[in-house]
Every structure is written in C-alpha cells, then in structure tokens.
Amino acid sequence: MRASENSRIKPPSALLALAELHRAGLELASLPLAAPLLARAPRGDGGPVLVLPGFITSDRSTRLLRRYLDHLGYDAYAWTLGRNLGPRAVGPEGEKLRARLDGIFESTGRKVSLVGWSLGGIMARELARAAPERVRRVISLGSPFTGDPSATIPAKLYERLTGETLSGPALERRLRESVEPLPVPATSIYSRTDGVTPWENCIEPAHSRAENIEVCGSHCGMGVNPAVLYAIADRLATPEEDWKPFRRSAWLGAVYPSSPSIN
Image (spheres, rainbow, N blue to C red):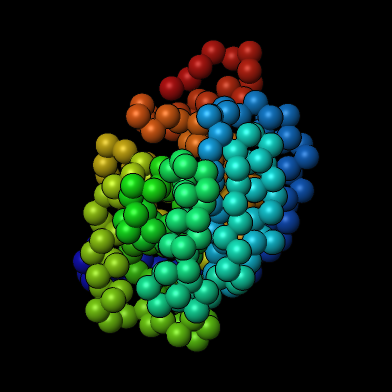
C-alpha cells in the first residue's frame, strides 16, 4: 500500500477504544448462549493447530479458543513463548517461533495450521512465508499486517516494549510483502468496529486462496467472539486441496438449521 493511501487510514475512534474491554466482556458472556450453535460447526480431519496470542498477551488469552479447537478434534498447541513482545519473545529473526513450529511438525508428521490474534497473526503470516512446506493455512484475527502501522492505537507502546520501530527499511520490506499472496490458504477475520487497529490494516490482498471475513465485535474479544470461533472452525475444516471461500450462509445455517441455504 502506497504512502498516500496509508495517510488516509485513521486510528479507531476514542469511543471504540474506550469500550473495548466492556464489549469483549459481552462477547465472552455470550458464549454459553452460542454453545449449541458452535457445537454444530464443521469438523475437519483434526491435525495440529498452533495458536499465537496478541501483543502483550500470553497463552492465557487463547485458552478458551484452544479448548474449543480441542473439542472439535484438533490438537491445539499454545505457543509457550510467554507474553508476545514481538522480537523479544520470538527472537530477532523469529527463530524461537520457527523452532516451535518445527517441533510440532516433526512430532505430528503433519502440516500445522496457524491461528494468530493481532500481532500473532502478523507473525503467523511471516512464519508461513518462511516455511510454507510446514504450514497448512493461516487464519489471522484482527491482525494489522498491511496499511499504516502508526494508525494502530498501541503503536507507541509497541515500539517501547518490543524495541522495534514502526518505520524504516525492515517495515517497508514487510509492507511490500503484505500485498503479495501467501503461499498457503489465508483468511483474515476483521471487524469494522475494532477499537485497537483500523480494519483497513487487516485486509488480505485478492487471491484465489485468500479471503476476508467481516464480523461484528471488538478487538480484545476476537478470541471469544462466537462468530469468530465458528468461522475459524469452518476454515480449519476446509480441505487444503479443495479450498473454497467462507460462505456466510454456513453461520446462518447453524443459527437456523431448518432454513434453506442462502449464498
């Protein structure tokens, strides 16, 4: 995305940012009501799924998501690298995260699906580019992998805690890469009411095996949002060799199982 285009991307409104935790709490509280619908989600052939947490958070934040994936028959793995502080967590070249992927691949003998929340999604995409032969697919949740990084609410905090600047040659290279399709199927789940990162920063470039799924919800509640969980389950169940884009009617069919399919 060119600089002139980046300049038009604005951070989320202060109202959305201030309401983040409250809205995330409501999404969490809705899970018991959505449980019967989530139980009807598609189930794939199992397989390993590595779940990467967002900025500042740890594996505790993805516990419910991983439990749900385990319930669906997948082997859901935590990333085990502590709090996600960018290079300080994964290593200057991402070597610690690569070692985690290699360990799962070698122990299971199967390609690993990557589900990354926010910064975790950016890391998942970079990991897929580095080791496409070991990655089955990438699903990112509210991940600002393109656009203008400075438009994200915690941009200054990110620079201070990670030691990585949101400018310079390394960032320019990453942004150039972000408009190139991933070598594996890719899904970006985003919300226009995200109070942390502008949704424009989360849009996957057009490609035959790439898609964007819009949900209604907060950034901090992505990992417990029922619609997000259903979309993740649906995408994981899609065969790698017969990939098809997500149909919103699949979610409607779970809500209204007796209704005819609507494409």
